[in-house]
Image (cartoon, rainbow, N blue to C red; front, side, top):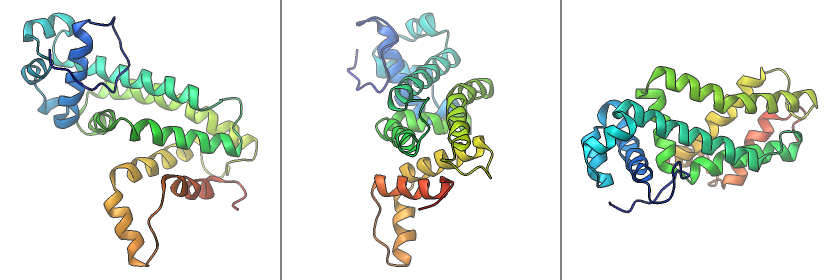
Length: 207
């Protein structure tokens, strides 16, 4: 089997071919989306036969769902470790934004897979993923509003997706960001500076 650098936590025991198949599937799906990917290409990259792939995952749809669920599970576990949900303070908000940026920034294949979910994926899988990935974030944002940390003139869900959307744009659009800043002669931003700007838009009492 071809050795692949994995972005996914292990779903199966060490040495289980299903781990390698999922890693290969992530690479192919990230490059081509659901409809553009084929199980033959995934099996070839994983170094296994198509019948073995189909035996384990039941075909492309089952494999897409398995990879998507692993990414969602990894995201929730990572964010749970990065953010204390009982402390929606200013520092807690920064930790949430930093964790969101770090997770996707360190996983470019998962980031592209997640983008394909919106463009080309299975609708029911996307709905399930969205519900799982946003539930705790919205609750955290709501607590931050109650405590006066985040402005309350936005629905908490909108505050969450706006900040998350800005981070996603930051991760995939460095050329556009740099060019927009250069029009007025402003310097490039660091990740931390960008997070600070997001916070300045979210704070109930802007600094």
